[in-house]
View 1 (cartoon, helix red, strand yellow):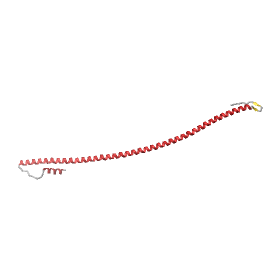
View 2 (cartoon, helix red, strand yellow):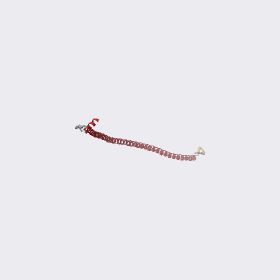
View 3 (cartoon, one colour):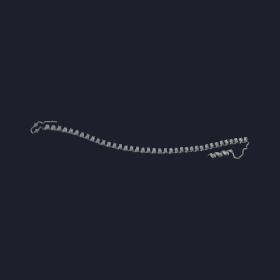
View 4 (cartoon, one colour):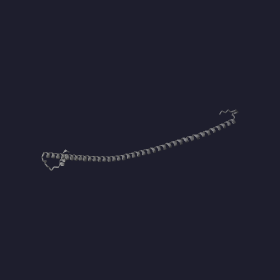
Length: 174
């Protein structure tokens, strides 16, 4: 704001200077009001920044606390799951061992039955062979007796049973 004053005796016109100083005072008051408004806005902004920082810190703290809780829960869940898995594995192992013992017992029983069957079968075959040999021997002795009669030779009678002879020869072959 540029102002020029008229020269009067002894300096500038006091009325013009008063008007001008009043204008300057009004301008200064207006600028002071604007400055006060800006300071209020600055204080509000600073207060908002401080509030925002406090809120951000609180949110970060809450987020960290929540994250710690989530991590703790996850660890507990993982430990529980691991424990359950170990328990399930132990139960499965016990069941498997029990089942294996049952199968082994059944296999051993089957082996015993097979061994018994083989022994009994072998005895039956032996008895059959003895019986066959006894029958063959009886037939052979009968043929020999017939032949001897035809030749006029009297067969000698012994008290030995043919089947006893066959059983004895079967035992000798074992």
